[in-house]
Image (cartoon, rainbow, N blue to C red; front, side, top):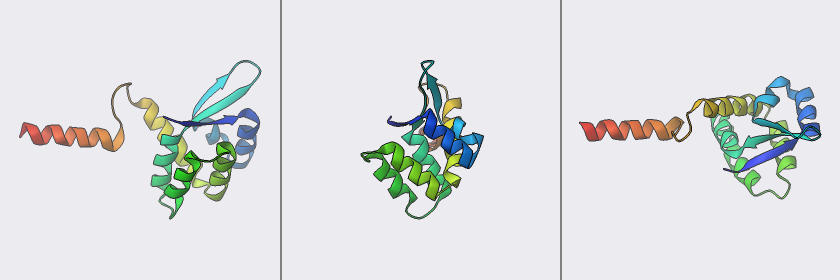
Length: 119
């Protein structure tokens, strides 16, 4: 799964604008000198669906192919501030799923298919 790497300086700017939730949108990494967060595009896609704003899912698709993904991501959250909270929720939900197990609609569909075949 692709992700967007947000450098610490940009993350601090986002934090001033949107609050501490930006630090919970993805995994934090640091080598002791340079820090950054990795935000899964899957979490961004799920967040866009949850927000339900017209045109937002298409904007996320364009984000995947952007030449400057960090800049495109920053523009996206500036245009839709609700996205930050929804990305945080999507990342948290995905982090709670044990490795190797599908999450969300995929898991529910698999469960329903298993129940149908057992009947």
